[in-house]
Length: 230
Image 1 (cartoon, rainbow, N blue to C red):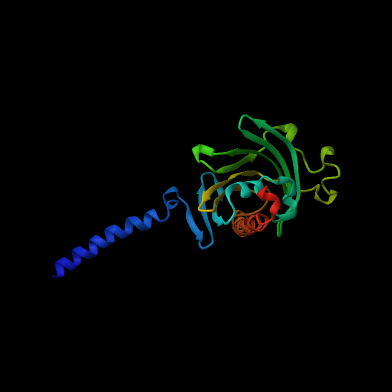
Image 2: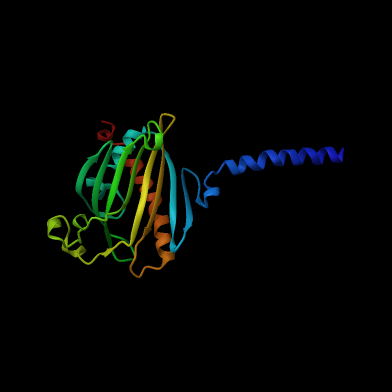
């Protein structure tokens, strides 16, 4: 009887343990869970950097196209995205089925000096064959003609002179992936950003973890506006 009971326990454990592992598919990719609930956040070490990568996952009741319209509304980021004080589209163009956007922004940050950067975004539908999904991915601009400083004459009237001494962000790459989930959307946000300057890595990591939930909240609230459903 005792042997039978031990066999049953072992069988149950064999069934349960793999299911637990399968319950978090990101663990095998090196992601460490930092927050769960309606907003899930992971961190991951990055080779050659003390600043960690961040992955955030959350759900919204609106369909993917609505959320995609929100994250593409770059010109109005300063109205609803955390810390954003300048959000200027420098150029939009189409390359086949993809939209390419060069976007300049300034962040007014707590505790540290303000930062600026220009990113090159690639917006596309049905990425990697994911039907009904949308992706907006970005890297820092590598075009010297589309990478202005805050004091550049092309930004006159856009940037308040008090932001001329901002520090340029050292690294910034990431993506929004918006996938159908029932009648709503599953939103995955990935970012690796190194603020550069004299900011210690632990402060950069803490700041990223604090900013991410605010970002999710901003997207959720903005998606309720009727213009994004058009």
